Image (cartoon, rainbow over all chains, first blue to last red):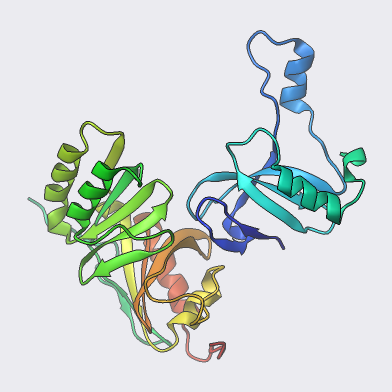
Amino acid sequence: MLIVSCPCCGVTAEETEFHAHGEAHITRHTVGSSDDDMETYLFMRKNPKGVHFERWRHQYGCGKWFLMARDTVTLEVFGTYPAQTTEPPADLLELIDAKRPGWREGA
Amino acid sequence: MSDPVSALHHATNSEGLVSICEIGPVGMITLRGDLSAKPFQKAAIAAGGVNIPNQGRCLMELDRGIAWMSPDELLILCRYDDVAGKLGDLNGKLAKHHALAVNVSDARAVFELRGARVREVMAKLAPVDLHPEVFTPGMFRRTRLGQVAAAFWMPEEDVVRLICFRSSAQYVFDLLGVASQKGSEVDLF
């Protein structure tokens, strides 16, 4: 079970109070983009064994969306950060580098 | 005008570890906007009769108060009859600001739990750390109760007040009844 801290309201609770909504940091190709880009946006998702960045929502709490980095194998949560970011924060990436050396090659 | 009817007609259950009572109707106004904006704060304080609570907390007096719901939402509690007046006042004061005030009194049900084992009963149903040093009177928690959304706070030690959607009031009442059945003591706290 995941223990999640919501960056919006500060609550720390187990995962049943939250809901996962798939991969984070997806580029939204839209009107005017190529068919290949559109296909990537709609259907292509990573399915890593290890570090994964995800969108989550504090479903039963403040109702806000946020992003989370976690390990899909050990279920360790590396950290959560606001949804208004286009890439993971540098300090979080550093932490993951320290805990999972070489994870970027598989990402 | 018709009389307000609470969700469960003040259903009570005092046979278990704690006494459970549906205490509606309670006046409730959802107020959304920029919590740090001065006009918003002034209007909220005037309507709630108390200060703006900090994140994750509520400020309650006998039958009125304000609860912090999310980074852009407050819940104003008051007497049921006072809602219309307060709502008009809020809408007037916030007419030129980006804010929203809605009467949600009839969309909700409110329960009161009393007894030395309220922490234990709540801990069985919600994913919340209810240790006396962690969850203290004055805190306000939106969470899950069994399968439905709920929010609760402790006006004082051994008392819990709980808000849920009116449509799930019967479920919550039954759920609390089961969690407080005699013989189901956990002796956790």
